[in-house]
Amino acid sequence: MLSYIVRRLGAAVVVLFGISLVTFIIAFAVPADPARLIVGAKASPAIVAEVRHQLGLDQPLPVQYIHYVWRLLHGDLGTSYVYNMPVASLIGQRIGGTVLLAVACWLAELIIGIPLGIYTARRARTWIDYAVSALALVGISLFVPWLGEVLLYLFAFKLPVFPLGGTGGIRHLILPALTYGITGAAVYTRLLKSSMLEVLGQDYVRTARAKGASEQRVIWRHVVRNALIPVVTVAGIDIGTLLSGVVLIEVTFNWNGLGSLATEAISQLDIPVIMGTVLFTAVLVVLFNLLVDILYVFIDPRIRYD
Amino acid sequence: MAKVLDVRGLRVDFRIDERYYPAVHDIHFHIDEGETLGLVGESGCGKSVTSLAIMRLLGPGTKVSGEVRYGGKNLLAIPDAEMRRIRGNDISMIFQEPMTSLNPVQRIGTQIGESLFLHRGLTGRAAREQAIQLLQEVGIPRAEEVVDDYPHQLSGGMRQRVMIAIAMACNPKLLIADEPTTALDVTIQAQILDLMRRLSRDHGTSILLITHDLGVVAEMCQRVAVMYAGQIVEQGPVREIFKHPQHPYTIGLLNSIPRMDGPRTRLTPIEGNVPSLRNMPRGCRFAPRCPHAMDVCRAQDPEPVMVEPGHDVRCWLHAPVKEAR
Ligand SMILES: Nc1ncnc2c1ncn2[C@@H]1O[C@H](COP(=O)(O)OP(=O)(O)O)[C@@H](O)[C@H]1O
Ligand code: SF4
Ligand SMILES: [Mg+2]
Image (cartoon, rainbow over the protein chains, first blue to last red):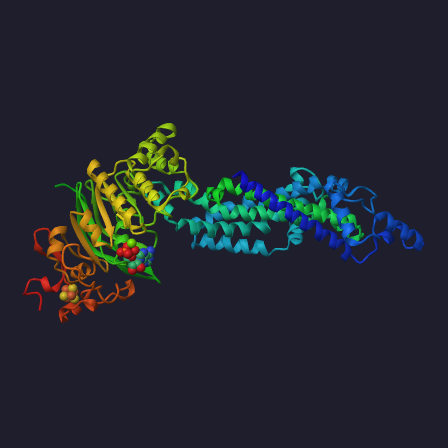
């Protein structure tokens, strides 16, 4: 168990190095000279060269990369050209909002998706199963900003139950989470349904019935737990990608988070902020996957000794 | 002797593409108290379907009719809740695949405990102690540790022992064992059969032993029912059937196993295959493979006929003369 976690941690460190390399390369792929961006178009070439030197941009690439990693290891993500502030503090200001929103969206997907999956699996091939599956398909094909606008119009404007966007608490979270939940739940519904149908055909389910267990007991004690194993994997990957993927939701609902920070940075070519947000979200994804791997061990005991 | 189970006219139909096809067709047999009855036949003859029908464990898309009498009741007619009290308590079952028959995410103790909880109301320490005791009884070493193991930590033979412990947890009157040793290697097979014989003797448990192996029947059973294409074609005491088999199918099966006594002749498997549900031959279902098939065989299905008390055969060769030929 412990060695399993240590191995997973080791793998995560390797991945993190890879990510640092990729973000470093991204910075050089951006078709702009950071020094010129900082000093402005009118500055003399001498001043530009001076700034280049200060930034270390006149050194060979491998040296620059080593410096970059060295600074990263000390928690230094660079300084924003636009805000003239450490990127780490900028991220620090915005991360809370994004995590809150992402977790709310994720929970909404699970809260809508999992019960529907269990429900449709138990009524597979009935009209209610077909109806839910069709609705799920509609949900999956809706465009997030569009659905967001519709929900805002209905439940914030026409029927002013919720605020018209903005950052805040539960009341501000419900509509964005619902938007994401409606578009994302179908993945879980389908996955869990097919997983449950597969588990329902397993020999150990027949064993449980042969013991005299009721249908309720069979479903909850034997089927659901086994059927959730693939769902946990997907849910883990999902929360990781959600942290970077809530951008559309942040923009639609005017929510202050990492996504809006990154979109602003891109439009302003604020390279350290772009690099910082990309790196940071990648690290989060890796960490969440690690968390899922560890969580897995508790759900599926077979993994422990692999 | 009193009958534990009496199956009368059991019939099972499966729905395939909007039509129903019989997989088990009008079978009759009974099991006496303390007796082990063998149910033999090639793969696909309807043995598992018969056992699942008795337990009412067949899924939707299945029609089951006839009677399964147990304790003065027809199990096919009682409410679901009453049937659940019988499953795992009065009648329990073990299966062919020990590797997949246990829940991979539950500890062994939990899985044995479930039966104890459902039928005896035992929980916590009492259930755990009882589970350890059961593990010891089925010959599992280090039972105090195994009770906390997960199935994947045990070998196939050990898992089948655990299945037997679960099945015996509530001291059932009847144990249905569907090819319990088919998936195991020969030495383990012998151990599991020994265990079942011992438990049956110590607890007076009757066994319905399903197998395709007549060697197992010879070793374990007092009586045997031979099944072919959803029908019982011959049944009677094991000794009698091994000495004087009457049905051409039984004779074919016996010729295809190595005999310990007689000369070591070459094995002659029966040619051809068990027909599928959708291609049941008219008349006697064995006719396409039978070396003695006559016109009447292909025209009309024979009825079971008693050749000796307690020995029935379903074959035109043994029908009263005026009906046959
Ligand atoms: N659920 C099912 N639906 C349709 N056909 C089935 C089903 N279960 C079994 N059968 C068919 O019924 C016949 C008997 O199967 P089975 O009882 O499993 O044979 P065996 O004697 O090997 O245990 C086979 O032809 C099999 O294909
Ligand atoms: S009834 Fe005819 S075909 Fe069938 S087993 Fe007897 S002899 Fe063979
Ligand atoms: Mg079978």
